[in-house]
Image (cartoon, rainbow, N blue to C red):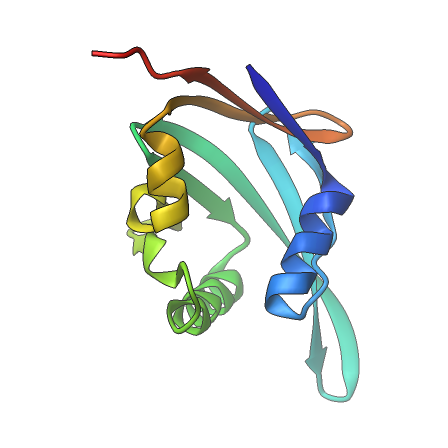
Length: 138
């Protein structure tokens, strides 16, 4: 089974939850590009970040990101801000520009994962594609 979300739908959800628009674009079969506007010395500059889905293990999604030391700093700041929001405890920074998204740490995702197996997260020109299958009854 597949769930397809447009990049606009994802951006709108992020803006609704975080109050900040983040344009999302296709970056490769397992990669999305996110751009973020920052103010530097009275000028606005766009910073790009590539996020890649490296691996899915059970309910854990391992991501990597690229962009350099400045991006590392910004990602760490964003994670610290997210920790104080609902669901923020599911984000865990790992070494080497990697992140763990532990879906089972939230009640909603944990309940859903009792019934499905997350298989893959991929991307095409228009959609983020989440592939899953029903969990087999014991």
